[in-house]
Image (cartoon, rainbow, N blue to C red; front, top):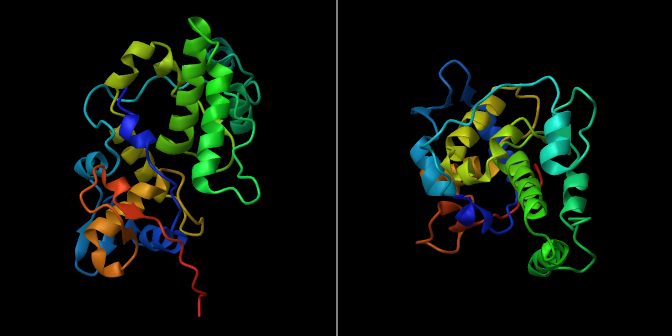
Length: 242
């Protein structure tokens, strides 16, 4: 479906100060960042190079419904939050995949944490086949797309894209990378008083690492790695405001 390299990414730590600084330089009239030397903006080419997600193909679009209750119950076998809501609880999705909690245990490293979650999920889905396996795949795709590609603020996950997952054989034909960029642009247009963005923040971080190297953010670990998300290690800035 084209999500392979995207799903093999390692831990992504947000650089809140960098993202907020970029957001405050967003020009909503021309949809670009305004710098002293002019305008700059992430392009579809940047999306491909950074995430490897597809930007050509069928558009991620469709009809917006007032209620997604029927789609969620039929395709995911879950209950939607509120009769007229397009949100489903993240914890409910995780539990349905055998990953009850995504939190790290005390003293557990990132590698051990991911290995434990992977083992739990595989054990829960090992006996699934046919329609049950398709349902689990849709749950997993809803978790990935709803929290990463088209992420929203808060814990619940939006499922407006769920109708596009009904035919699993066509999921790989959609331009998820283009949808990611459009969703990110829409998020950047919100008030500067709101910290962070609702979209896929690592795109902005790596875009800044790559095009604005003088900032000195990000530590290169694999200089020839593609997609570019695998090239840098995300380091949290522990310095105080002073």
